[in-house]
Amino acid sequence: MPSVVDGIDLRRVPGHVAIVMDGNGRWAERRGLKRTDGHAAGEEALFDTVEGALELGLSWLTVFAFSTENWRRPLDEVRFLMRFNESLLLRRRDEMHQRQVRVRFLGRRGGRVPGRLRRRIEETEELTRRNRRMTLSFAFNYGGRAEIVDAVRALAAEAADGKLDPERIDDKVLARRLYAPDMPDPDLVIRTSGEYRLSNFLLWESAYSELVFTDVLWPDFRRDDLFDAVRRYQGRRRRFGGLDA
Ligand code: IPE
Ligand code: IPE
Ligand code: MG
Image (cartoon, rainbow, N blue to C red; front, side, top):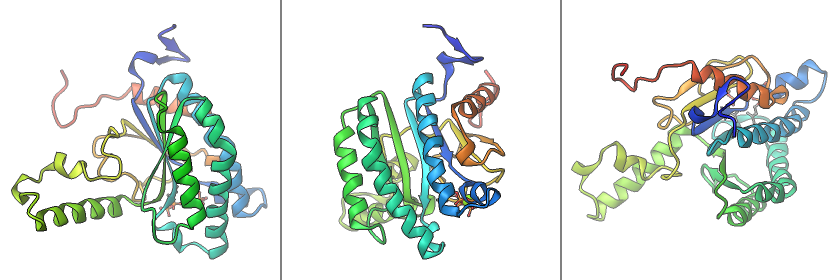
C-alpha cells in the first residue's frame, strides 16, 4: 500500500474528522431553488465524502445534520428534514452496511423527533452495530450544550443516589457520560459555507481539535475537499498546551 496519496501521508491521517455540513440553503437560493432542494443536494456531498473517508482509512467521521436550535426554522423545512433523513436512512443503510460502516446517532432521541425516524435510527444502528471499518455518526437533534447538560444530569442523579462522590468528578468521569463515551475527540473539525463558528457542535470534544474552514457550500463538497482539509491538518502543529517536542 502506498503511504502517500494525493499529498496526504496515510500514516498520519486524523483518526476522527467531524464536519458541520453548512450552506445548503444558500446553495439553493443561488440557483433559484427552494432551500429544501439544497438539503436534498447535500446527500451526494455526504456520500462522496464518506467514500473519500474510507479511501483515506479514517476510523471516525461525524457529521452535523440537525442541531437542537434548528427546530427554530419554519415548520415546512423542519418537516422536510425529518422526512428526508428518514428516507436517506432507508435508501442508504444497506450500502453503508456493505461497506462495513457502523452508523450511529448522537443527540437527544426524544422530544420532537418523529417516532418513525426514531425507529429507522434504531434499526440502522442495530443493522450496522458490528461493523468496524469506520464509524459514521450523525449528530441529529444534537447540541453541545445539551450533551453536557445531559451528562451533568446523569452525574447529579448518581451523586444523589450515593453512587458517586462529587469529589471524584473530573473531565474523564464527565466524558464517560457524554452520548458516545467510546468516541475519540475529533482531531479535525471542518465547517463549510464560509462561516467561522462551531454553532454548538461537539463543544466538549473539540477543545483541542484543529479547525478548517472552507467557503465551499455543503452541496458542492466532494472527497477532494476532504482531502484538502486533511492536507491542511497535516501542516498543523498540535501542542495540547505543552511545548513542541
Ligand atoms: C445546513 O445548511 C443544513 C442544516 C442546518 C440542516 P443550512 O440550511 O444551514 O444552509 P444555509 O446556512 O442557510 O445556507
Ligand atoms: C449548524 O448550522 C447546524 C448544522 C449544520 C446541522 P446552522 O446553519 O444551523 O448554524 P448557524 O445558525 O449558521 O450558526
Ligand atoms: Mg446554515
